[in-house]
Length: 116
Length: 118
Image (cartoon, rainbow over the protein chains, first blue to last red):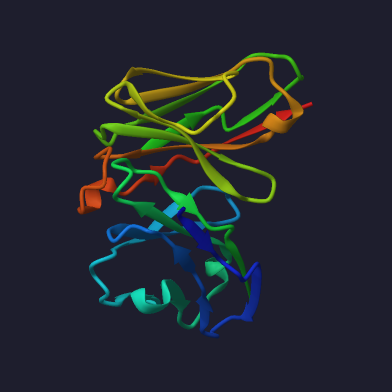
């Protein structure tokens, strides 16, 4: 069965520090998709990134970067030079191709607190 | 330009009542979803509809009945509300229903509806 583990419940950093949020997943499928979503204090869920299982190329978007490693079933998210506005709960999610349908399985989330 | 909208944003009601949450998307997507986020922030899919047809039903109590009048709307009706139904309910949509290998299967979420059952 598919499963997503975000072992870090809460992380506190000071502004401008770099921080990495860990995500480890389990799946029996060879084709799957990984996602990160951000939930700021206002409560909405904001899509950040989607990654295919066959594309292990790392991605950078501004201060955000993602490290996908199939060998360790991990899809970690790094924020460089964190800012107070980065304070949020971040969710990693997995969707398997073999189900035929989009069905996101979420991790339990990591709460990031960035203090000034 | 709201992409996925939900009404109401907050809903406070008594046990035993029946209530509905509405969801609309203006993205032209074919597939819509309902997720429940509990008090511990855990998100779990409840239902998925594609072009008004139910495609995923995740063993949700039959007190919950989704209704899709057209592919831009997916409403959630809850009968005989219980204390345990208190949660944040999120609606989402995606272009495709299946795993397409393209970005069209990315789900975009609404702002959520916080339901409190007293």
